[in-house]
Amino acid sequence: MYELTDVTKRYRRGKDTVTALDNVSLTVPEGGRLVIQGPTGGGKSTLLHLLGGLDRATDGSVRLDGTDLTRLSEARLTRMRAERIGFVFQGFHLIPTLTAQENVETALVPLGLRAPERRKRAAEALESVGLAERAAHLPDELSGGQQQRAAIARALAKRPRVLLADEPTGNLDESTRDEVMEVLESRWRELGLTFVLVTHDSALARRADRVASIVHGAITVTDRSGAAAG
Ligand SMILES: Nc1ncnc2c1ncn2[C@@H]1O[C@H](COP(=O)(O)OP(=O)(O)OP(=O)(O)O)[C@@H](O)[C@H]1O
Ligand SMILES: [Mg+2]
Image (cartoon, rainbow, N blue to C red):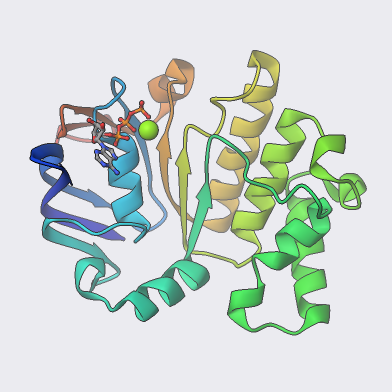
């Protein structure tokens, strides 16, 4: 689970300081899903970067299962990311010269797994997103939705406990959007992942139990499963 306490993130640019997150406190329970919405520039991606240990908070603590990510050394943070945190971005970021299978396998190299185990896990992950038949295809031989499913397989092959997705359907047309959301949703439920999702998909936000809105770096969480929480 995530526990964020009084998290502030400021970016310096020359003489200017931008406060991207302002005193954010938040919990995401193990196996829970938090949907994040809000206007452009509000701080959504900044929050996801802090949750994923891709960037460090200026102030406050970001605990994942009790470990404060803001205090970890760069090496331990890198290992934590490689082992426990899956990322899916708006752009698919697949390596164009590698097949879907090879793209997924590459993500397993930092785990120190042997090649046969990497092959097996990658094939399983592609199968789990419905892409087994396209495993030998290059990214530009796949549709947008298929590329994003390959990217989801890449995030899941390491068997993370956490999945972070930043507008994963932002580059897709409407019909494909639903297909990718369904894959994410079914993986989340089946694997019991802790799932944080930035999306503009209002249909999804309507059926989610917890929705956070981030505006000018301040967060408001609406919890429909119980009482409203900050
Ligand atoms: N590396 C950076 N250096 C300086 N300012 C930054 C940096 N990254 C983000 N910001 C600023 O922090 C604020 C929050 O940005 P962020 O990317 O988190 O917003 P967002 O909610 O994800 O927006 P969008 O919906 O457009 O993706 C913005 O004002 C942005 O300009
Ligand atoms: Mg963003």
